[in-house]
Amino acid sequence: MPVRSTIRTEARRLAATTANRAWAWAKRHGVVDATHPLAAELGAMGEGSYIAFPPGDRCNPHAVHIGRECVLGADVTLAVGMPTEVYPPDCPPVIEIGDRTTVGKGCWFVARERLVLEHDVTLAPNVYITDHNHTYADPWLPVGKQILQCDPVRVGSGTWIGTNVVVLPGSDIGRNCAIAAGTVVRGVIPDHSVVAGVPGKVIRRWTDDDGWQPPLTREVVVLEGWPVGVPPLDGEG
Ligand SMILES: CC(C)(COP(=O)(O)OP(=O)(O)OC[C@H]1O[C@@H](n2cnc3c(N)ncnc32)[C@H](O)[C@@H]1OP(=O)(O)O)[C@@H](O)C(=O)NCCC(=O)NCCS
Image 1 (cartoon, rainbow, N blue to C red):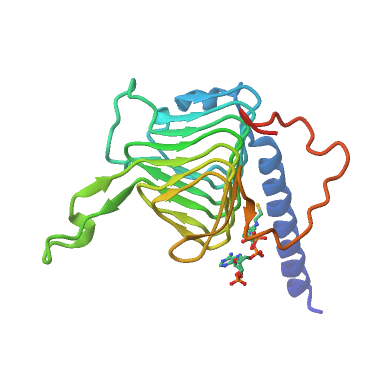
Image 2: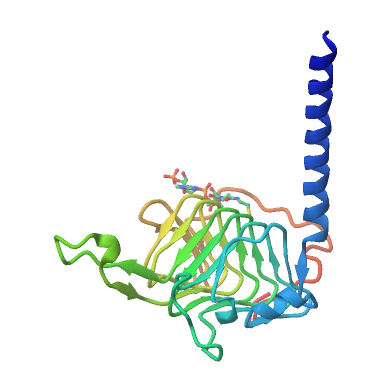
């Protein structure tokens, strides 16, 4: 092999190794926890919580409140309004994430008024949650320029949201629900529902009187000592 080509190949290898090592280093050391000065940009970040590197985009982070012992994966967008919109420094929380909540990589929280995740919520990667729509009543004005309508969103304690779910404005998801992968959620979802499809429908539900209906399709074997260190939700467990 000609010398010049060998040098080029080696230079490329060196560049790739350096870039990968630098990225791994940045991911290890770029984690922001509640004690980090960057956490002060948020309205609140509770003890034991951390945000992985690289972080997603943020707008008005002072209107974002994160509870204790939360884990936010890399590239999670926390947007209150748009970059051109200024929320006053002492505004009430717009995005609120409860204690012990886990947010998968690449999730989006896009809110203007109120988007609340209660405690112990788990979000798989790439979940999109928003509390506003563009209106489209004027047939001539570009929809993107028409006024926005807000409708608050709540995700109840203990709920698990699968990957690629979209939660639309006005959604009120109860506690301990399971939202199937790819679901588009709207409206009120009662506690202990399993929801799937587009639009999301309750496909299974637990009640005091009837247990799971329809009955579970899979037997669940609970390992001894499981779960570890998780307090039961009020009135449950
Ligand atoms: C919803 C889920 C948890 C299964 O729950 P389940 O109560 O055991 O549901 P079942 O497998 O008994 O399926 C019940 C019905 O829902 C349907 N269903 C299940 N998952 C679905 C989905 N993602 N989208 C649409 N329909 C779905 C099934 O086809 C079945 O329909 P049928 O009765 O007409 O045959 C699982 O399918 C799922 O979507 N998991 C999310 C995985 C994920 O995102 N993981 C990320 C890790 S954090």
